[in-house]
Length: 289
Image (cartoon, rainbow, N blue to C red; front, side, top):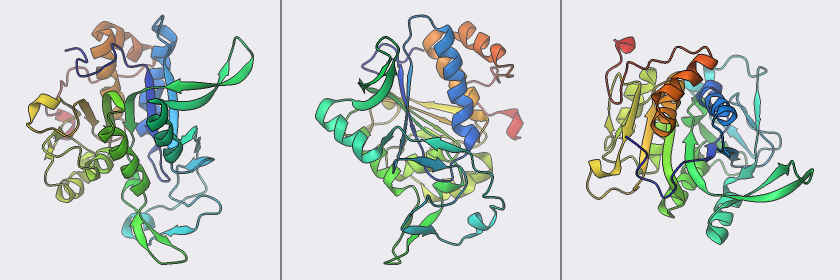
């Protein structure tokens, strides 16, 4: 079934939500698949934009950035982190505030990119075709303001941004989540009444927090179409993947819908990845049983 719930014939501009304490493979696996597609899908000018609360770098480890006016609240989740010095970091292209401001002014996100023809950096305006949300321990941690003591979710700014972008009608093709990225998305209210999955190890926690979502246990990936429920808040597709490596299966199925199964299968082989192709949309995966 093609991506029919979109105003663009082929999604090309991918935007990733990052926050401190995200899970590396949640995004790195699917994005490497897209990077491979970008090399082999002729005529497709794929773009990638990294979004976060602040400029600079986003920490993979659950540690605040330099100069932060807040700290992570002590919790059982945080105490499980035992080596914060192993900290791959992600460079931020545009902040949530700047992206939202640009979308409201121009309908796209202004990004500074390298232009091969001119040999210089130029401004480029990108539509938000796909908004991608990884999971990770940081999606469920709380912050405490050092000055006021105010407590809030570590991902609150991401929740607010996703809600605003979707309610503004700026996402043209689909939302995608991996792992507890669906927990973050559920906080926006956009998953209410829709089918979804999440990390199998965090399933009970996530399902308890968001009772209005039709959580499907043991599924590798779920594709929710807007016509499945009445009064849908978000009239585009929502693709959710289970924990961590399941994001790669999710993305290969997404590529299969856009470019065909044979093409997606070839991408998997180029990456020497054993795609769980036999587990279809919304089906229980024997791996989890």
